[in-house]
Amino acid sequence: MNDILVDVLLSIFGGFILTTISLIIFQVVSYHPYSRPIVPIFFQSISVFLGLVIIILIDGKEISLSSQWTSILESSLILGITDIMRILPLFYVLMLYFLFRASTRTPLESPLLELLESE
Amino acid sequence: MIVDFMLVWLGFFIMLVGISWARMGPAFQRNRYYRPIFIIGLLCIISDLSQSQDQSKHIEEFLNLIIDFLPWFFTGFLGYYLVLSGAPTYMKVRYPPLITGWVIILYSFHLYFEYNNHLSVGDILVSLSTIVGISFSFIFFFFLVRFVENRIPPEGPAPELTDSEKELVRKIISKNIGVDEK
Image (cartoon, rainbow over all chains, first blue to last red; front, side, top):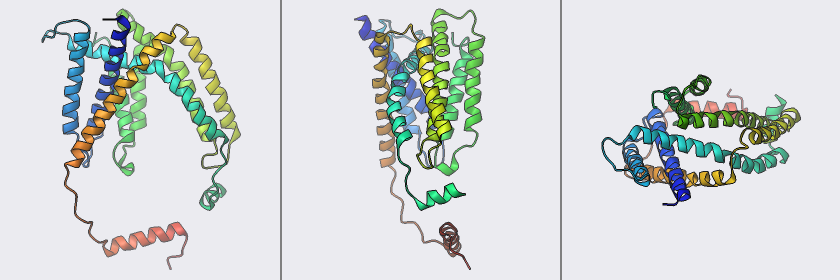
């Protein structure tokens, strides 16, 4: 397979696994009486496992119990974090436009806000 | 490899816990300890970076990337925070934080180019594909939550307020619109 295509696929699955694991952690640690996280966490865990299987297949290795699952998981997480850190400046540049608009906008006219400022 | 890198993953996990606690549940039930938890996680990562000796090449590259990332990111974050706090969103414009924020943002971009000059456009274009995976993960999560929420039977109509609840609501509204209760 083409090297660039492999890198692109690994980046896609790296981002997917990183985000899915982050969402699983979010659901577990932010549990409250109104949340129902069991079904989403179950299917998300399966999707992470399938993602790891696909990464092993992309690498051209055989799937077995002895496959280094934790090592592959760690590599995927590292790849996901690396990719996010690389593309974050692009979002910073996009946000500059909104920041510039926020800096130059006229303040809202509201008697309640004026009251707040006068206190 | 996992054990060598354990402190970074622990820090990453604790930071996620902090972010989750900041965003969890109804606004009035959010956990108040999210800030210290987040800072502890960040310190775990930074302390491990300062002690990272004899790591494998794979981890060494990742640690270098974090070291290149932190200076411009935190500088930029501070600049954005100052600009937003000085912008006339709700209050009148406050020029000292606004101008200082813009200067710091420009400096953060200078830091980015200083620390990341080894990155090529091709690297960034390949990294952009991670957005597909991230989006797919969020869409998958959205459909899972919608599936679970749709299976919950609707609750019956809420009971009428009791006299004490009505009195409490009346007091709150009177206080907010400035009407004397007596």
